[in-house]
Amino acid sequence: MTRLDCRKVLSMLRDLARSMSDTVDSRTDNMVNWRDGSLRTATMLLARRPSSDCRCRSHVRRSMLDVLRDAGAQLDLVDDDGNTALMHAVLSSSEDVVDWLLEAGVDAKIANHVGVTPLWQVIHVNRQNCIGRR
Image (cartoon, rainbow, N blue to C red; front, side):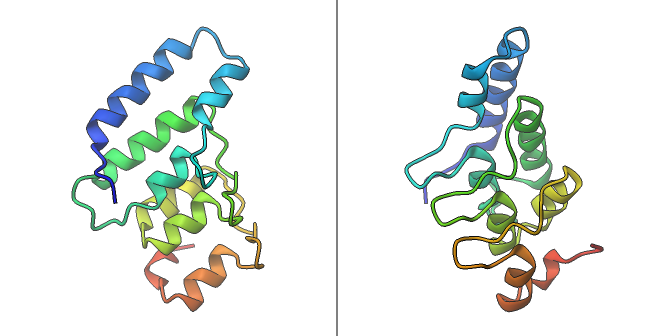
C-alpha cells in the first residue's frame, strides 16, 4: 500500500479548493471526482484507510473529506465493482468516515454489482463497530 501523507494532501486540497472557488465549471468537477484505474475517487481512497492507520488521523481524514465535499465531490459515485465510499469505509472499519458520510447524506441503500449494501457488509463481515448510533 502506498504511503499517504494526509497533511500534505490536505494542504494541496485546500489550495485547490481556494484556487477553484472563483471558477466553478466542468473542469472543477472532473478534478474533484477524478478516478484511478479502478474508478475509485479520492473520497473512496480516504474511506479505505483503516482507522488504525496512525499516518492519517481521524480529524485529518474528516478535514480532507470536508474539503472534497466543499469542492463539489460527488459522494455516491461507485467504483468498477459498484462499491461506494461508504462501502469502502465499512470494509476498512473506519467508523469516523462512516459517520461523516452518513451525516453528509450519502445513500446507504446503494448496492454494489453483486447486490451487497453497506448494512449487509456490517452484518456479514462483522464490522459492527460501524453501526454506532445509527
